[in-house]
Length: 109
Image (tube, rainbow, N blue to C red; front, side, top):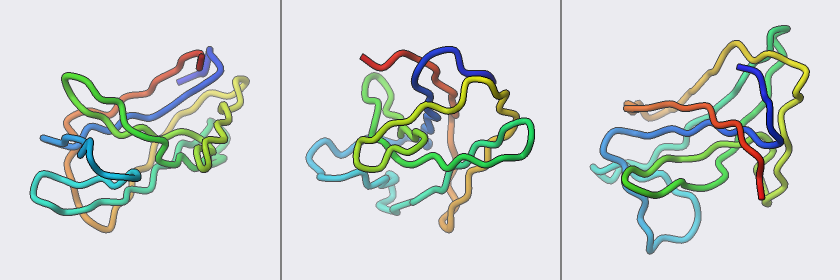
């Protein structure tokens, strides 16, 4: 993957996940009530790691969890554009299954 635009994100869609629109914060609660806190990392072609932090949710027909680089405190930072990203690592103390994992590359308004 190679960035083209000014913002990048990884979207995770856990199986049957729906955002609790009444909740405050970014808790990822699975349908059975289990809360997961995945760690998401992306690696460039030289093995340098970039931590992706939970940035929010993309809600629609399906709900996704958005992870962006430096997303804490709404301080978004694009990944360096001159790199090619070759690996994605997702780690969780609580196992869960994603029906979809997506790389998003876009211009933030």
